[in-house]
Image 1 (cartoon, helix red, strand yellow):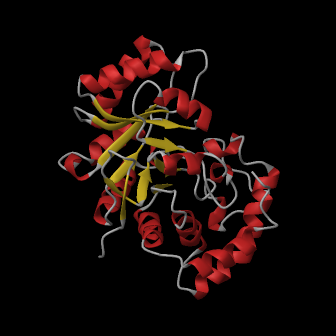
Image 2 (spheres, rainbow, N blue to C red; image 1 turned 30 degrees about the vertical axis):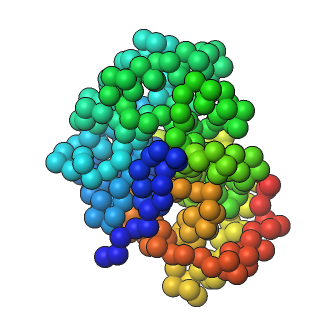
Length: 305
């Protein structure tokens, strides 16, 4: 099996695989999943060349699953997690200790602020993160869901190696300001929502109702306009992908990776087979003329988000 391509994460970070295993689904975010199966997903990712795993304090028991899966294999991955709760000094300390314990490691390679929270000054939050770095509990610092303005403010207090924005064929807002800024200042981008939480798989109708235990049942981003656009995109592009020996899922991922501003695409999975599909996408190098053709198909059915 060929290795996954890698890209440098920011100016000072390591080379990471273009596919990053996202920990939300194996924590039960898309419905219940058997622990053995969830651990098998992590092992499959390693077997397919993934060397980057991203999770979060807020992803239910995802950190515990990953910790169990990485016993004896911790040195094979660049491990990232996020502070999801409040930014008080006491919570940050508790959160990082809990994450270290759950992940069964003595250090977190990349520790990220999951969301900006204006009630806690970013200067204080960064000071706490820098202290954790001095203690060698964390390696690099990243941010998630930050605007360029918020990123600038955080970077004034310490190096930010990565930003984690939402980006897909439908949600393209990062192209406007964040991607150009990150490229200019050598900040890595680890994008999420690549498959619009599964809607670009072609498996769901615009009116599909997710089970109550699935976080997507009430997710604010899955509006009727987004659902309709996803179905239309699948109708337009599935055959195009299949004619080239790929699935719609692979196309959705490969299209994002064709953007030079993207370092890695975070792809969650619930089965080893899904992991294999995502990694095939990571090896699919879309040519400029192919991307132009896809962009023409996207135009007119995106809600413009």
